[in-house]
Length: 352
Length: 165
Image 1: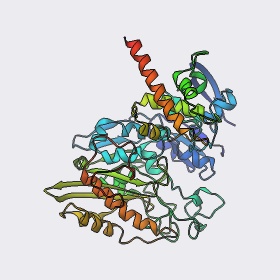
Image 2: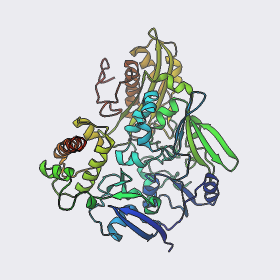
Image 3: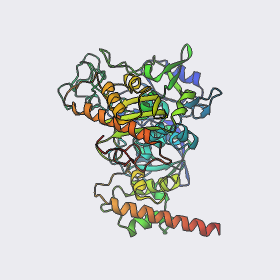
Image 4: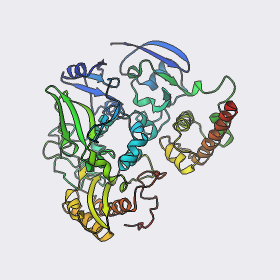
C-alpha cells in the first residue's frame, strides 16, 4: 500500500477542508477502500478518516414523516433497527442480503453508495480499464463478461454497480444529502449515480471534496411497507454479489395496483429504476399477467454486453417473482436467507 | 515514515503504541503484538479468518486501519478462555468437531461470539448458517460448526439463567 497522510477531523467543515486537497479519500468503514488500496486500484495521498464525525451516525424521523439516515450508520445497525425494518422492509432485506455479518458491522450508508464496481478488470491493474485509467480501453469487452451490464452500458464500460441497498432505495425515491464547498445540497439517488457513456470514471454527482452526510427517505416510502420485497440471485447461497436483483413495492386496493415501484440491481452501472414498468403496473390488475408485461417493459431496452444474454431473461423472471412476492405480502419476519429466491413463497411459482 | 499514537485495550490489556497509518488491525495484532491466533487468510475481507470483536462487534480486522480504531476495546481468540478453562464456544467446537485443520477456527469462534451477542439467529440452523456465512472453512466442517454454535448458545443461556436465579 502506498504511504499516505492520515487525518482525523472532528467536524464536518474540517473534514471538507482536509479533503479539498487533490488525492484525498474519505475513510469510513473502510471495507471497500482498504481492499482497493491493497490492490493498488486506489492510491490516495491522504486519507481523511470521517468515522467519528458527530451527528452522522443517527437515524432521525423528520417532521414531514420522512426519515434521515446519517451517512455513518452501519449497515447492520440500520437493518436491525426495528422501526426501520417495519417501515422499509425491502431496504432491510437488501441490506441483510449483502456481504457478511462482519462487513455489515463495519460498512456504512454513505460508503455503500460509493462502493466501486466488482468488475475483475477494474480490480486487475494489469488489465485495461477506462474507469481506473481513462482512455486505457476496456478488457471486459470481449473478456470474461457473463456478469456484466445489460442496461445502460457503453463501449467504454460494461461494469455494474454492486450495491443491494441502493436498489430498494432508488425505488423508494431516496435522496442523497451532500455537504460541499458551497454548502448542503440534495440529489435524488436516481440522479446521483451516472451511466458510463464515454466517461466511466465519473460514477456519481460528487465534486472533489464533497461529503455524503445522509440519505433521506420521503414520507411516501413507508406506504409500501405491507407489500415490499427484495430478491437477489447469487452464484452461491450467501455472501455474494447479485447476478441480478429486483426490489418491488406495491400498494394494492381491490385487486388493482394503486402504486408501484420497481428497481433492478446487477444490471447496470447504477441502481436501475424501472419507470416504464411502473407505468405498466399503475392501475393494472394485481396479477401475474400484469407483472409479466411489466417485466417485458423493464427489460425492453436491454442488450447483452458480452456472454450475458442470460441475464436479461433471468432479470425478467426475477422481476415477476419479486412482484408476486410483494403482492403475497411482506413477511412478518425476514426469511432465514434474506432476498433468496430459494425461500419458498406461498402461491409463487418457483420458475417465475 | 510518520508514526501515529494509538491506544487500544486488547483482551483487557491497555496498549499505548506508535503505528504507521497503513497498518491494519490484523497486522498490528500479529506482527507487533505477537497475537498470532487471529489468522490472515485472504487479507481482503472474503474469508473471515481475521474476525475479532471491536467494541463487542465482529469485524474483519484485515479491512480495518489500526489508527482508525484508536481507543477501542478489542477481543481476540487469545482473550476468550478464562485461564485454562475453555470458553463454552471453544469447548463446543471441540465437542462437535467444528474444525479439521483449524486455520479458520479462531475466526469461526470470534464470529460465533458476535453472532450470539447479536441475538438474531435464535436456534434456527438455517439462520445460523446464514449468520456465519462470512467465515469460510476450506475443510468444510460446516455441519459441526452449526452444531457447536447451537450447543454453545444453549450452554451460555443456561449459565445466564443460573446467574439470574
